[in-house]
Length: 157
Ligand code: HEC
Image (cartoon, rainbow, N blue to C red; front, side):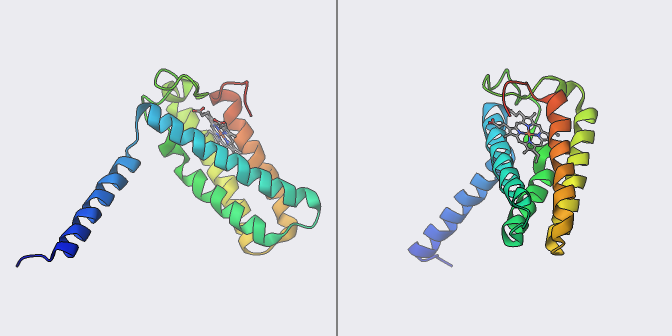
């Protein structure tokens, strides 16, 4: 069977997309560090958005649902943002301290605590329980801080 030109072109483009996706999953070195910093910035934005709703005293649950969902998803992916070799030697702008890779078990414990808190926030928001959002968000914030104080260099957020 000979493929028509458009079909062959389509399959070729698909193969490139698949190759691209594979690369995206296996970022390393400076690229992984930059990718991670982007993810963390997004996490900061989502947290700020939830915080503003909580602070308002009458949270807009539609906003909270979207952002809590993003935080929960990110919390499950977070450990994959720290492949070995993506520290400050690879990317000097990184604030990821070397102790992440020498105490990976300790780091993963913090990541798990964060994922658990994020899942509770997500569950509270998805069920529409506005009163539970504040306390659940407080725990999420504590989990961010709990990791940052040991594993992130100080001078930023
Ligand atoms: C398990 C550890 C861990 C958890 C949990 C965690 N972070 Fe981070 N965060 C880090 C590390 C490490 C860095 C430094 C990354 C780098 O610079 O390479 C960082 C960086 C950041 C940055 C700075 C990004 C930049 O480059 O400007 C922000 C903002 C941030 N985190 C927000 C959050 C928020 C908000 C949460 C919780 C909702 C959170 N983080 C949870 C470890 C964590």
